[in-house]
Length: 159
Image (cartoon, rainbow, N blue to C red):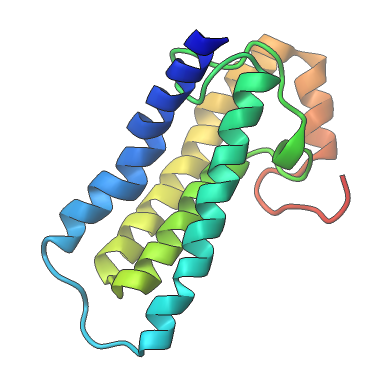
């Protein structure tokens, strides 16, 4: 179990960490986008914190239930339908985008907003063209049933 925790932590730092920490840091080196009211910057802390909590929950569910990590080289061995995955099929990507929305507000950065938009499109294309076909081959009818009952992006109110 300790090995799985280490692998999950490394994958967490490498993948969402680069999308939400490294790239925004590089973009901010060009500077923020000017004056915004202080309350807007403070309000950005809400989606930022929420996104981090959502992402951590997803990583924990991947490790506990799926016995894998978010890294493509160490995917879950069991279809994860617990926690946030009961509400939507891609909560990890939604969490990353939520973090970026918070960063857009906190840093008043149009560059990070553009990065978030590019990433949202890339996530959608990856899900449709790669992840869903792989999951369908790996988990078969269980994944088809999951797709019929759980929406891809917009969470539903009741599991």
